[in-house]
Length: 186
Image 1 (cartoon, rainbow, N blue to C red):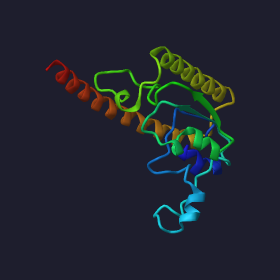
Image 2: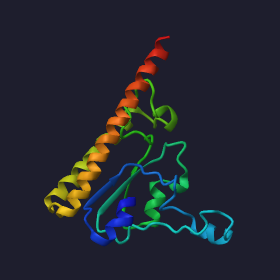
Image 3: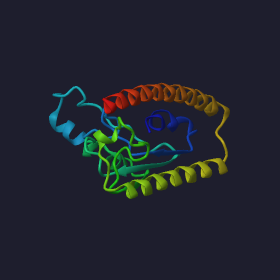
């Protein structure tokens, strides 16, 4: 979302974005309370920060929103991002936890911090719906054609960085899993 707001307005190379339950808290980019900032004046370091906008991006942007993420501030979740950027689509995943899209429920799990949602069946249904949404957007983007060579270069770099970060996270997760199993077995 930040990339689309900052860079895509000029080149319009991003065709589709699916943001799964985005949180705009640290730092706040889309959901600053501008009215409150105006009332407070200069008492806060962020008091003059304006919101990023997705209005000039031509990307097909969809954000999902789960309502069982306990530590996500209500003023900074996907519903608020969409309110300030009404051209993006919002998909509500009621009774599902914030990490429903990626968590496997291992020994050390983000679910323990983020809430589990209402039921395992509901979480499974939300995961399936999210996968369907992503596949639908990918198919639509591929039918309309690929981006120019410039975007491919940017995307190739981003993909390389993403793979590197994913490998680092997997390594950390494996280490945490081993320690969790050791604690559980003790």
